[in-house]
Amino acid sequence: MRARRSKKYRKIMSAYGLSFSFRAPYQVLLDSAFLKTTYSFHMPLQKYLENTLHGPCNLFVTKCTLAKIMDAQKARNRNKREEGAREDGQKRGEGAGLRPDFLPPPTEVPLRHCRHKSDEGEDLGIVSEARCLLDLLAGQPHGNEHAKNKQHYILATADADEREQRSKGFIDMRERARMIPGVPIVYVKRSVMILEEMSGVSERAIRKVERDKFGEGLLGLADRKRKRGMDEDDEDGNDDLLGNEQQNGPKARGMSRAKGPNPLSVKKKKVKVSQPSEGNEGGPALEEANPRKKPTRRAGKRGAARREAREPEGVLAGTGAIVESEA
Image (cartoon, rainbow, N blue to C red; front, side):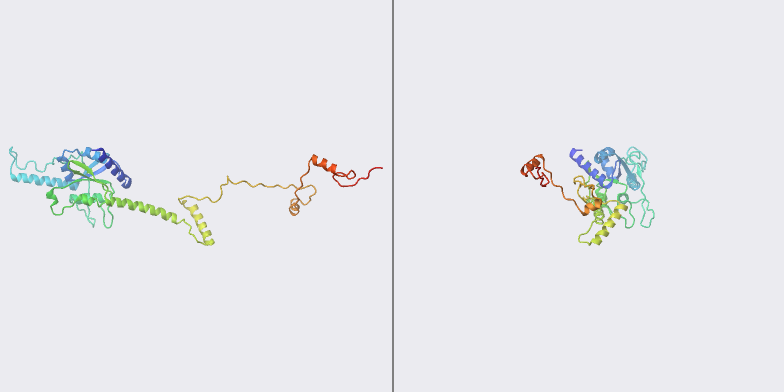
């Protein structure tokens, strides 16, 4: 397999793993046309499928597919018996009902149990190969149930013979399997095993799931969203409801806005402590009633010396009193 094709197939299987939870080892359902085609081109089943799906695989054949292969083998042997005995002189009818060469042994491809029921719940037993595989891929829905690949099966098929395609009641399994979401399809074309890209039905199913998840998130945010133009009473009521919701239920996802300034960046307020004076008997209450005036700034020594020099001799410095000089 070329590197470009291998990288493409790896991306497809990783998409199935993320969207529909496909995990290795993968469960692959084989049909009769796929077994015939791979045998005619000498393609080892296990090796080619693991290289295409990029992981270990478990191969299965259903009871209805096995019944179709054995019926076709019996019809082929019956035709040979009617034509005549073989040239080597073996008895007529010898070899009838033998296992065909293209059918692997049960040790390599085990049998997958399939149980088909009608709408009334009655067992149908062996049905056509196409209906059997489509029932397993769709999860055997009943009534109004939607088709869903619950068991994560992978369909391995090939183009049927022209004679079978012209037969009445022919069902194109690849076309029908594309209508079921989450079904990878592997087919053989000119001795090359190809993995189909994801069908449109599967892509629409993925988009629907993503849309539902996104809608649930929006509804959860809308319940806690405040409307504009509301009255103060309504706002208070909504605040109470929001508070109750936050206490009882989980907190809503989203960015929380700051309700005030950063306390680390705010300057702290200085607290003034007033001390009562000696003559103040009323205490702090009296000081608040009669606030004291701010004391004036006292002059330094130089100012006092200059003031004494300016005042007359008979005046006491700093008091303004006249002192009589002694006779």
